[in-house]
Image 1: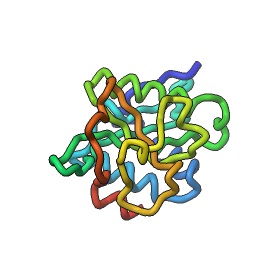
Image 2: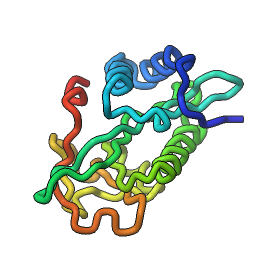
Image 3: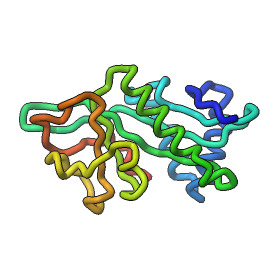
Image 4: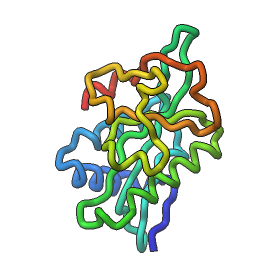
Length: 171
């Protein structure tokens, strides 16, 4: 049985291994480490999927801002999401996403932003960010840049450019 839990210090090495294996390179694992050591890190929003004590997946949500004409609006970025290759296509990623959305709501966040597969994330309620006048600060297909309102009307009157911390550019 899969358990979704906040990461602990004992999980860090396993998270690094899972992220590297899932992406086939160390860049995203390095990003997780950088975020973990940044002021944008929210410990409760770094979640692991475990079975029999073994980390099989990881999802990370961290603080970003939407730069609007009226000032910055806080949002949460979902990045990265991964599952070890041997356990993909078993709904572990979906469990991580759903648990993360629930935890973001519990922590009173309003908006989640992500760059991801346009056929995967809409099942969780994500929509094209451009529909709300929210733009990525980099070139990305319109259908892949998505947003989720965690509260009704959280995006009403909000439009602008998402500002990721500089370390996202290092990946």
